[in-house]
Image 1 (cartoon, rainbow, N blue to C red):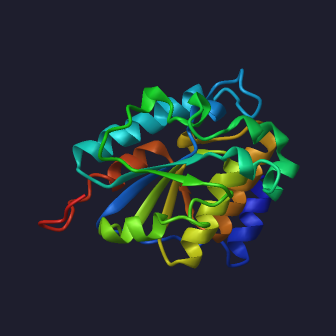
Image 2 (image 1 turned 180 degrees about the vertical axis):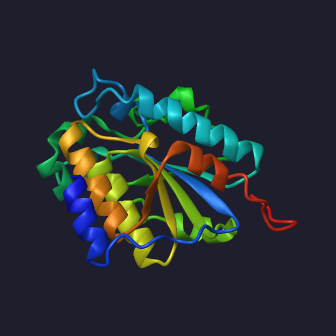
Image 3 (image 1 turned 45 degrees about the vertical axis):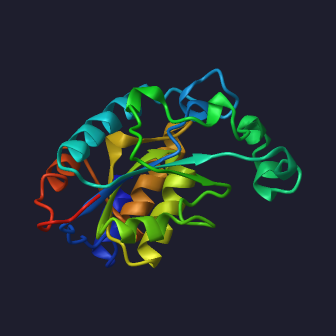
Length: 214
């Protein structure tokens, strides 16, 4: 992996992004259906949840925007959604099911929106971009699961939308180490800065513009 990283860097990939003045924290799909290993699409994400909680605590202290995503389907969508043909394990993620609620360890607040999606990217078919714009956010600290799926897809779309994105590696996770590491490398090379928890906390301490609201 180090050899690939060196080849990418020397070949003109993995440029560095400039942090914004008002970052938002976007937490992708850290719902019970993904963080509980007893649920079919779930896995052990305890460390990811713990690190993400640190980011959330910092964001809340700084009054930075915080947004979550969840995946939820209506019964009518179960047989018409192509994604569920590839990932039938997610058929349990029914709207109103406990599986689609944000993991309680993240202490979701009433003023923190949960954007419901039915595709991998947090931006696909949702109002996430509009919510970020309304909050005055100019960059994203991206947390959640899975690294190779919804986190990656969201990072790609954020880049396409011109939103600088920072991914603290401790705050994202996957069902297996191989896809996790490979996708962190690729995300960092092409779409977002993969950083660490300490840097993410520093980003959230950047003073927001005077009078900026959540």
